[in-house]
Amino acid sequence: MIYLDHAAATPIRKEVLKEMQPYFSKFFGNPSSAHTLGEESKAAIEEASEDIKKVINAAGNGKIIFTSSGTESINLALLGVARATNKRHIITTKIEHPAVLETCAYLKKHGFKITYLDVDELGQIDLEELEKAVKKKTALISIHYANSEIGVIQNIREISRRKQNALLHVDACQASGLLSLDVKKLGIDLLSLNAGKVYGPKGVGLLYAGYNVDLKPVIYGGSQELGLRAGTENVPSIVGFAKALELAEEEREDTSDKLEKLQDYSLKLLAKQIPNIRLNGHPTERLPNNLNFQIDGVEADNVLNYLSDQKIYASAGSACKSNKQEPSHVLKALGLDDEDAISSIRLSMGKDTTKEEMKEAIGTLSKIVKTLRKL
Image (cartoon, rainbow, N blue to C red; front, side, top):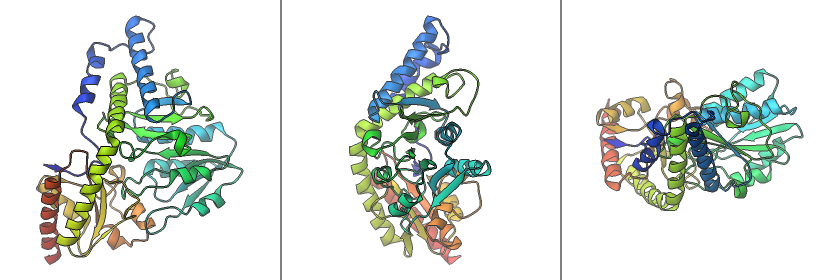
């Protein structure tokens, strides 16, 4: 098996699983219970929160709200701010994750004005266009750190400098473990993350919110998570998330260096073995594990099915919309026509992906493309 879909999900690390195990059976108390067993669970959550604050450089300057996913974190950021302010304007981009775009569509139906920024053919926004879009009534700017489909990185620090009095929410789910998450240096007010992208457990995410951010809850019930996310906390997964993020940060520079070299090697091999392919997105301002490219004369779904038959697993874009039979909104925003968009696939490598695996995968891909082009 060769797994090249790390942008969709990563396998859980053995160190993370070991950290989680005691909280399934030994320290299983409800964190809201008043007895010692419950207090131990509550203490584990508090410790995980502090460990994560160290990773994102938010110690003493904000709150962590644990959620079920990156999608829920994004919903809490957008809806939570919208319900807590009288400002009725939000700025985002045309290439955001569906969690952002669908939430913005909901808010638009309820009286909010949404500005959708264009991107250039390489997938980056125009900073001057952003600056012009910010108004006194702008409550929130929501822009991802790195795109889940094409891996293109946005200049968050420069975006922050242009936010004026608006809050800045950053979806950093794809960036974690590969880019710095320093919220102070980047100027981030709200940050969404999920554990499934950093070799942690699936089904847990978080929202960081600075102390200057006023939020209203999206889920109602108990007083858990500072009253912002009702429901009994998933203690094992929260503990695992903190461990996974801590390990990812410790290894981030080495992992990025390795993946940059592997990305360069793979691009050269693709160009050599498969005629008429084109990289989608910025050639350098992109995540080091991402290769998204068009293959003339074939459809991505057919290619991916044949790869899967050979136990090589890749994708055509975001897992959250992979069941939709339509061209990617991200690729369309770059200016690709339908034919080019549906001929694009994504290979997303992981920290343990090897040169040998990429050589085998690209060799197999080359044979598949050759066969499909003949047909």
